[in-house]
Length: 184
Ligand code: AMP
Image (cartoon, helix red, strand yellow):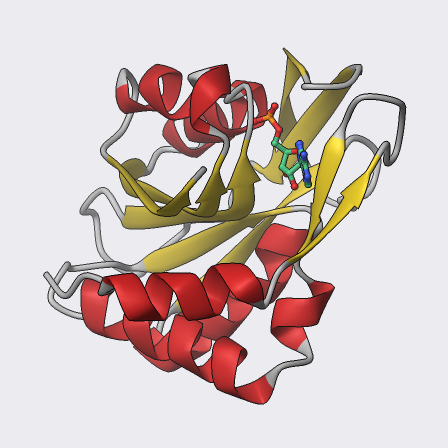
């Protein structure tokens, strides 16, 4: 599996802007819009993820609303597989299953379509879960649970940024293999 070298990590990290006290006092917000509008950084990131995952037999990429949609859908296209959105409660129109969880700031609930991973054959689909950042891990653990409840296997969860002191990646590793690109 291809990994990022220190120079590539620094380039990607430098492309992400930080905003203190957003959306509330005491939170340092990692703003990935400055990675997205930097064509070299966005291309480097997607090319890396493509080469990291192209040997794993992935059937779907699932992305968490809303920044996970951007990275997840782009990666799904690059890998030539389908994309499945995991959305905040009340946004998906067909039959859903949902999970409640605690955030670094507040509470939330996410949903997935019950039939999101339907395939033409009988085998259990392999799903790669993608989000921009892992903080407490609450969102990601809920998302892995939803993937399993929808009848698929979460073969790996992947996060661009990992706020290591909050130990979220440790929590997610208990339910699925996990790859974090930039550990802070
Ligand atoms: P958590 O469930 O605590 O791991 O929170 C992860 C989710 O919240 C991800 O979807 C992130 O986009 C968002 N998030 C949490 N903390 C931050 C932060 N400090 N900067 C940017 N996004 C954050």
